[in-house]
Amino acid sequence: MTFSIVAWDPRAEPRPEWGVAVASKFLAVGAVVPWASAGAGAVATQALANVSYGPRGLELLRGGAPAGAVVDTLTRVDDGRDHRQLGVVDASGRAATYTGAECLSWAGGRTGDGYCCQGNILTGPEVVDRMCDAFEATAGDLATRLLAALDAGDAAGGDARGRQSAALLVVRAGGSYGGGHDVALDLRVDDHAAPIPELARLVDLHRVIFPRPGDLRFVPVDDDLARELRAALRALGHDPGDGRGYDDALRSALLAYVGTENLEERWSDGDEVEAGVVEHLRRAAGS
Image (cartoon, rainbow, N blue to C red; front, side, top):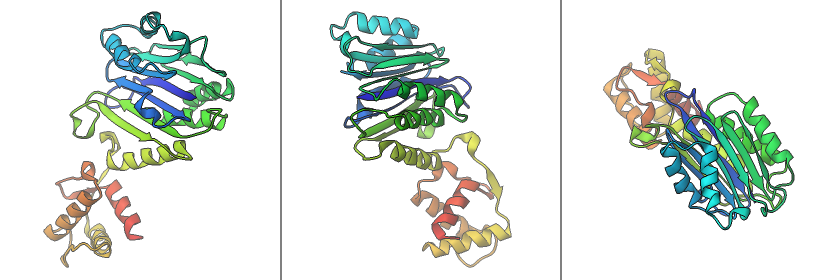
C-alpha cells in the first residue's frame, strides 16, 4: 500500500544529508514510514509496518552497523518479517531493501548508488523502476531528487489502491530552523486527493521560508530599490514613511513585513535586502 525511497547526498552543502520520501493510500503515512538521523542514516518501514524498526534501526546505524546488517538484525528476530518491508541507507551511503515473502503483490525493491526504492500493493514493478530512474536522472538537492522519484512512481501507477498521503523527511547536522537540531525538512500531507503535488507545493513554500545559506543573495538598497520597496510596502498596508533611501522608517516597515511573512532567515541588518524578500514583496503587492 506504500512506495518509498531512502537516500543520502554526501555532497550536500553545507553538510551531507539523508532522507526518505513516501506516498501511500494510508492516512498520515509520514507518521509511520520515514525515520532518519544525521550522520547515521535513514530507514523506511512499511507494508504491515513494524514501527519499532524506525528507532531500533537508527540506533543500530548510530552504532556503525551497515545497512545490510541493520536489515538482517531487525528482521531476524521479528516473527512477522514475512509481512514487512524495509529500506535502509547507512552513514556511508550503503543501501539495503527487504520485502517479506507474504507482502501483497506487487511488492519488491531495488538498490542503487546511495539509495533504495521499495513498495507494496503497487500496480507493478515499473513503479519502483521509474522511481530509480528519476532519482538517478534528476539534478538538484536531495529533497528535489526524492520528490522527483516519488512523482515518477506515482505517474507509473503508484499504490494500486489509490492516493491519500505523502511525506518527505531530510536531515543534516544542524539543519533545522536556527540550527538547534538536525531535521532540515519534515513535511507531511496526511489526507489529500493529490498528496504528491501538494507535498511539492509545501516544499516550495519551505524553500522560501527556510532557505539554505548558500541560496541567499543580498543586494544593496539603492535609491531606486528603496522607492520600489516603499511603494510595495505601502500598498500592503505598512507605513514606510516618506523619506528617501533605506532610512529607519523603511527598514522598520520592511522588518515588520519580513516578520509577518516568516522570512526572518532572509533578513540582514546591513544596508542590503535579500533577493527572495524582494521577490516575495513584489508578488504580494502585484508589482
